[in-house]
Length: 344
Image (cartoon, rainbow, N blue to C red; front, side):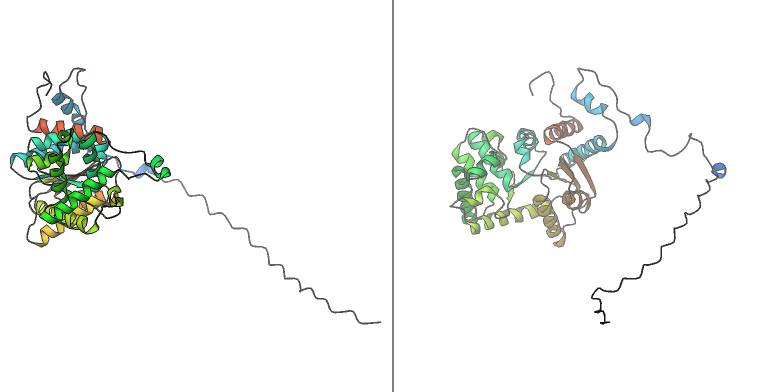
């Protein structure tokens, strides 16, 4: 018989032995609670008591009565405490600085902050580039904030000629005259006698002689796309404003720095300005800080609320609600609430 050809199929793998079925651990024995020691509710240390509960103000309550009716917990307590520190700083002639992102303007809160500036309570303003853009457009034409999606699709988003030209002119002026971008923008608005200068941070600060700095990162603002934009001018102008902010930071002892609606840029500016101040022999003791924003962010929590100050407050909420409440709380702490029978 002929030999059978060798098989080309690989030998079958041996079947592994079946894994043993795991044995279930024994059911734990229920703990004997008879040995637990209890204590009386009376005299137990607690974090909440009825004396700190809110009250029910009357429907026609005054602002002072409404503020007094708030519970003494969390944000309500923080608002009350912060307002007291700001009021104390004002009475003692200390600085109160307010740094703002663009949404402060876009939520219609400019008059709220400007009232505190005119009263001498807020002593300096510090704006992001976007804040200055919205502020300038409000001053000039009474409107701002374009439809980004629609403009982007058509290739016209951020291409407002007057806004870009005004920033380019102001930056060149700031560099030539060795002044900050904020002051140059404000002076330009005052000289133009625009119809809504009275609700402009830039214009009012220039009119009153209040420091108003503008801090930009090249490429982050629409005005950087304008054909007349000069990076060297912008860089020099905003660097001058940073140096002014460092001066403000060095004078913040027993005062306050409030960050409103800027999650990254202005908290970073504040941190660096504080580092410059303390590096050059200004300890900036007894500093109060606060962050107002709709949500909480890492940099605002660390750079503003936690790291530099003696005390910090993080008050989350919509600007259009929180900022008017804050203004009234400060005025109440100063005993300066307007007569509610008038239009004040």
